[in-house]
Image (tube, rainbow, N blue to C red; front, top):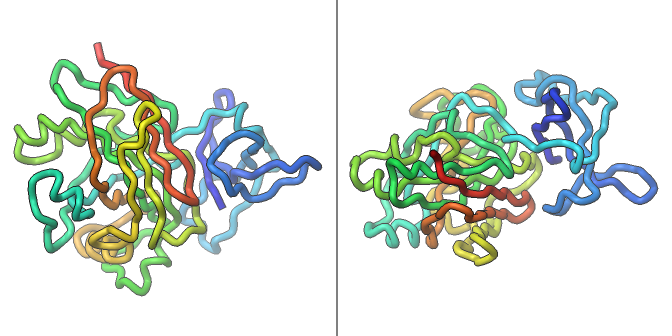
Length: 275
């Protein structure tokens, strides 16, 4: 099931993304395209529903008639650095023994088709980093690996945008990773996918820049949730970015960057320069 957060006129809500058949019937969407898709509006939000049931309002809109938003508004975004060996080496180091945790502020989150704003007055190099994102579904702490699936709501695409020169200059990552618009998420949350071996591709202006698989993660999703939840309480809607593979590179004004993850979808954002 794919859960989207969307705006229709002045109203914002959550819905199930469905494929509309020629006879008007709806079926769960299986592709990444939005053509021929509709969103069936949910009552309230899908997180923390006690019995796991989801109720519909009865309203359904073509996806072409709504604006897809970031699929979740997290209290925090927890990210993992150097979780692919090839990326660790392209950054000039060796893969770390343990996951490297850092935080991105919730104010960095934007949705599909929203612009990434290049802070030209402060940075001379802003990079893309395509990643698989985990969306937490319930309050949890100290989650053992075997129980990790119980606390995951689903998965989405992410771009861990980074001001690379500031990252090197500061010696820590808060400023480089924390600008507004530096955490695109979307286009929706896929609740029924196995994250063990998914293809991840990042395309900039039509050119493939990253192509890898989640099977190459040094620390898999279960290990990451266990590790992070031993440090901090995770809340419904929190997002965990699992790391980026090799191939990261710089963006400039006017670029378009798309992160596609197999069985989930495609997240596309343009780049503009701040005044």
